[in-house]
Image 1 (cartoon, rainbow, N blue to C red):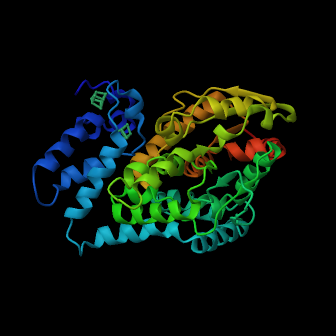
Image 2 (spheres, rainbow, N blue to C red):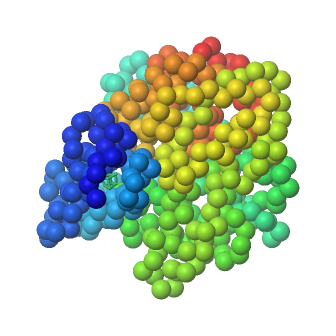
Image 3 (cartoon, rainbow, N blue to C red):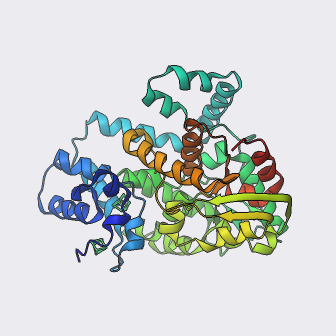
Length: 403
Ligand code: SF4
Ligand code: SF4
């Protein structure tokens, strides 16, 4: 099918306006790539790398084309055909693999905290060239201490600690545990778990993505307890483990069962578990993370949880499912396109006049926060589970904003 119904839902096509940067155009390029042996053409690589893998085209497609899987397969094919000594590929692989080192991420988070405390972020924003200033604005400021995964023999849900979530969203992870426990759950988080490997899979690093997936299947074991995830990008990827390891006789079945246990935290919590009062009215804009809405079909549950908090008035932003331009390391590899998508998202948010923005993916939170700051707004952007698990924080964060 080449109906083109996905074109207007594709963020890159809407900005660039070139068929080769649309889902249909990219599928055509992938067909050409597979038909011809040898290294991929530079123009093909550029159009495929410009894809955000946001999967908005999957939502739009009446023929259920699994575009995300097709794109990940194409990127792995391109990486395999590249000269093994290619410096660009090796640098990218090293950059992506940083996320598999929680201690290194935690150290970077501490540096970022110091950077903020001494006022360097604000100075850098004024004096650095625009591209560098944009990059530094994405440095996450850590929330409290890193989250330490704690195994529990009696756990009836298993929390994925994550990489960025563990290092810089420690308070959000702890708020998730509190909210689940208030709902009567016993929460464990197994030792030996790794980064989910989503960034590796998106970057064509298939072997490393499969290695990380096998380790996680081993770490989480073969029980029935739901595997609870607080990062939309990780959740969408964990649900694809069955596909990722389909060719591995020792793991294929275990990976399929693992994937069937994956739940976003918003699916496990009931609105009754979120029922608290803010003590005052608060306008809250919920931004759908691509990999929650398009990747996992989860749209209603986060909104139900927010509505259960007395005082929350949910306000709608235009195009809430349009990618904000974060997309893993996209804002580093394609800064101009990412900045344009960020600008559009910030304009949509500001038009809705929220007191606070809520999302369920760390990359989106950092991207929106940086965009709002650059636009002169201090409207806070809060993780969904921090908002649900710690409503006092939600209220306090919004009070300090001038909007
Ligand atoms: S995944 Fe997103 S950016 Fe890529 S083709 Fe589909 S809609 Fe466009
Ligand atoms: S991906 Fe789906 S919506 Fe897009 S052109 Fe192909 S069949 Fe049509």
